[in-house]
Image 1 (cartoon, rainbow, N blue to C red):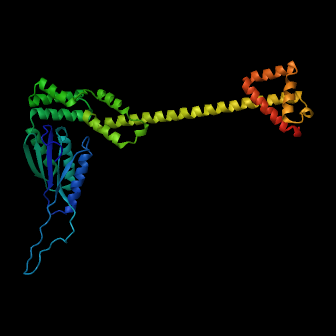
Image 2: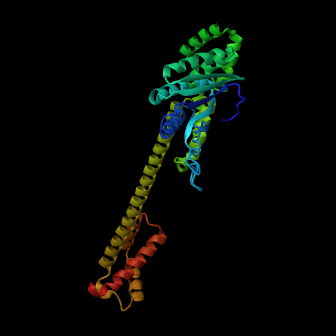
Image 3: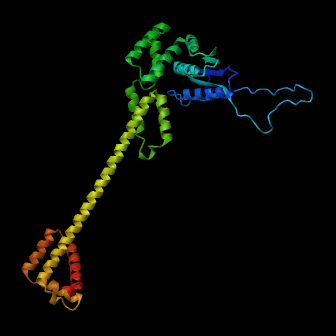
Length: 360
């Protein structure tokens, strides 16, 4: 069995095939299919099942003196085949699960024994091979529930479907309250218990969105994180479709943030590249302007016998006239050069001019 069998808001169901003449493999496959169908229902994906093994045929007794009975070979065990299963589920899933069982029974068409255990100790058994026979199980089961359990079951079913008690659901619950004989105070108390701390779907959205903020880019594909969030949605009564919507919303936000960050990084890199190119061009332009000034005032034949002599003569020539000094000052200002930048660039240009002096 699963979880706490003493829970007052859960039911237990046992299902076992009675078609002993059917191929055991077919029955086994049908049991596995039913298990999968139930776990695919909303908020039942973590249901735990106890499987009922199929009875193995006894060894055939000997028929003649000295003849041995047929027995399995030593060391070889036949695979376990299932004839049915047992599980426990919340009362608000009663109708949903019975509808699922009806669809499954229509496909298998096998005579099946159903044993329904309701809190505290009431048990109903039913044998049927038709889906419409399960309607008896539904009506008998609901008839045995206390007014409180029946009202709460219907309330939780609405919350599970809509995430809150909608006006239409409240109208139906008011009729149910009159039918089962509950006072308004009792009904309100049961609704408050079923709703928990979040009374409306909007409150659940707000709380779930806040919790999803913990999802960052590095754990988008973290299955453990999303498993925790799925459990949280179940606990707070947030319908699965809404939880999936909020998950998709968060992932879309993260995707936009990633794209925006990438665009910003690309823009910053391009801006830095443009600044670097502009800086390189600025310095190259000054170097050319300085070289033109030097060559205009210092003919090639006066470059001197060595680099040091050339630099000394060039600097003396450039500072000899106010006109040349004015041109240098104007060039430095135009290209926004600091004294240290100008000194470094001018020294480099003079060295290059001297190394090329033989070609001038």
